[in-house]
Image (cartoon, rainbow, N blue to C red):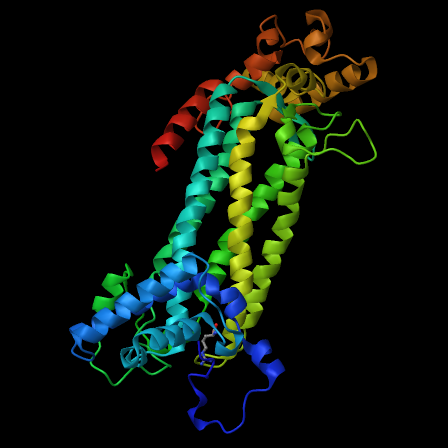
Length: 459
Ligand code: ARG
């Protein structure tokens, strides 16, 4: 294939060799070849329909582009750095194959609207795969939450035992967060799905194009309303990056919990061997590398979000070459987000809860102290006084290393005469969780209802 620059008409000297490599993007933007070809096929179809090119020219273009796509997919296409990017590589190959008709493809178009279209198409395709993985993770969470609706563990604030909760309820907290992430990702699709083609370099084109038709062919909701905006802004990528950063933040927190839970000190869960690795020096080790790596990758995604924001900052309208720098961060976000979601969705069924250990932990740390205070309030004591009474009982328990449920009725009555034998119903772990029986509460019954509603919400 000839490496002659498609824009060389006004140039007298060749490009400096290093500048050529420095400014090229083909090494990383070739991954958009399918979208580039789809965009070109739609553009040529529209050009012919509008009588801007002949029908046989359109047919030759489409046929040539399909062959090129086939060659790329079979590793038969030779990418050339001298041809700078995916767009000019494909266009040059087309002209070489079909002759003059290939030279007409770029009528009424610029690489500026072309690249902006390609990225949107690419991100749109990837977004669907990301959402599919995210939904798979959500379903895995629902299954685990359902199986563990009655399992009791200590709930924490400040990582100190707070109140007993059900494991199903805890898992459903992660479900809710991830479901908001899914909502955010789907939402950014609607603003992304506008078509830049027709904006040409920046001002539109003098040819009688039909942008609505091209948009329809490519599955866009509509053409971008302003040509300058269409070629210049990458806010859709930043918006996706923000949603991705939030999602990774959630995954990093969830990872952190899995890491803590699987430690010998907590022992709340075991993570199957297939998601852990060993140590080259310490024979006993089984490390939760997968959640650790996901926790680490969150930092990398935040970094890319900042690259994109900074790349866009203070750029004058319209297209600037700066924008070529949008691709590598964007692609890396996509790859790592997709990988993290895939491995997370696979990992959830590999978690085995250790119910006895969770229960034993919930028995420590006076997890039902609030229940006792609430009990006294129901017997007529103002909450602040009840708090004080229970605080004294806890102080004795700490001193004697005994849970409230292990004290006798007489001992408890020593703190308040309002306490009767029925107090033991609420001092049990089961009584404590069952009593929080309202929407959003931890009672097993409510957890099951929440799971039912969640299943209806999911696609
Ligand atoms: N490779 C370029 C990019 O990624 C394509 C657009 C180039 N346009 C231009 N006028 N130099 O942004």
